[in-house]
Length: 262
Image (cartoon, rainbow, N blue to C red; front, side, top):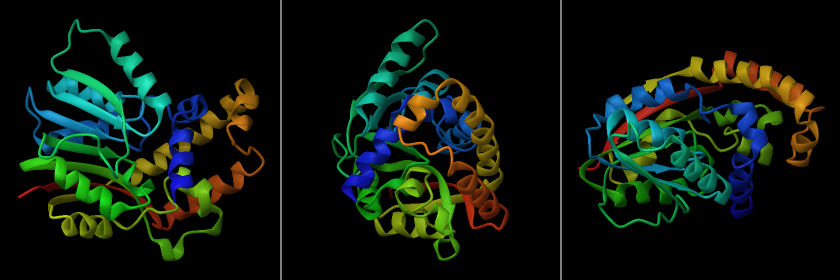
């Protein structure tokens, strides 16, 4: 489990993944992030924790658009560095909130108890080996009345194709993803009250199309780097075809969930 988590973090910190996924590492992109933030009713000055913050796109959006004071936590040192550089490059000119990034594990968040008005976690909970512990950490760091906003891949594991299992599938956010109802149960067991769920299956289908289109570009411009990072161009068509079929058959989807700490 530890090896899988470390490998997943390293993969999402790579430039090749950035080329494939673009500015936002999750289905629905920043448009879905805005929908999530609206559901959280974020106000200027709100203290927000972005768990698995990646290269900082969500944290920067929440700070600039909603005026939140955002702390991003990520397991990848490369992501923390890239996010910090992105924040510095964006500059303070039109900033409403603030943003900072630090290295940390979602299952052992390096922040105090009851320190945040909101926690967001996008397309990452599915990759955490110990989801119950991560859910308990979400609850621990929220203030009473605070809200959790989560978007994630959903999977019917009993029907998941073999091509999408294993570590490669883990990095693709499907090997340990669960149905939306199971995510809700994990959060409820941690003491959070789920108040809203919504499916966004079309978002994961659109992201797959984006990856297919960008794969050609990566093959032409960064093949050596991609292969060094573990991307298997020979196997990619079969994996993408399996993913496309699984989405069509509603084996794989995407969901949004909001919960509160009583």
